[in-house]
Length: 95
Image (cartoon, rainbow, N blue to C red; front, side, top):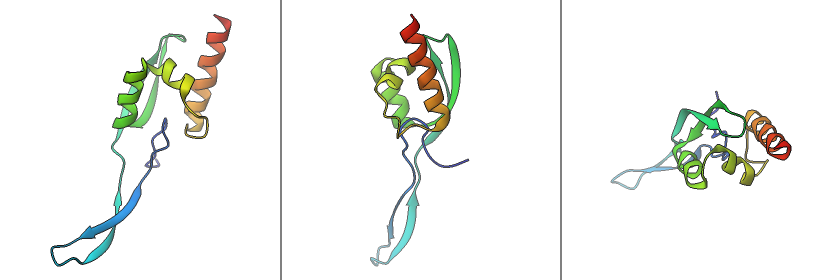
């Protein structure tokens, strides 16, 4: 399981641990990933994603999974999330 947000593409960053003596050693900053279940109003079902806390706040801010997926870039989404986005777009076009 990769340490990458399925909705925003946010992944690990690198930086330095800096000691009191100003010694620098490499370290990784990992994204705050959570396993969540998000419901789609259009499809009437739920989907499980592994997303960052920032992405969860963005989904809430935009008004739910359907609205988030409508604005999301295809390059940022994981293959599973891209499949969900296409399903939602298809259902919205039919309705």
